[in-house]
Image (cartoon, rainbow, N blue to C red):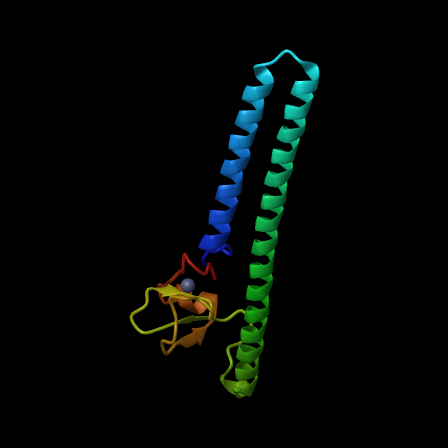
Length: 144
Ligand SMILES: [Zn+2]
């Protein structure tokens, strides 16, 4: 799945972190060039401000990611509910038994029903023991 942050988020974060780094560099340079304590204190305050800007930028970046993940979770919940409704319409006699695995013609491995390698292929359901005795091995992707 792709990153929850889009390019604009990454660009803004990068820009603010670069600005913060530059600000810290400048404040260090200016504070190091003087022996005056009050002048150094002013540059220290500027450095703290730069760090606060970085903290705010990172917080906003994390909140954007959190919002994106929350949106994806809601979308996924709707899709799961729709899929569950479709499964409920399948007659109970044609549903696989609990713990059943599936395979398709010319497959050498057995899979869980939701394995992406099975996709929409016509499958045959059986138990793990039956699949093993037929010479099939477990799928390395879905790990049935
Ligand atoms: Zn699989």
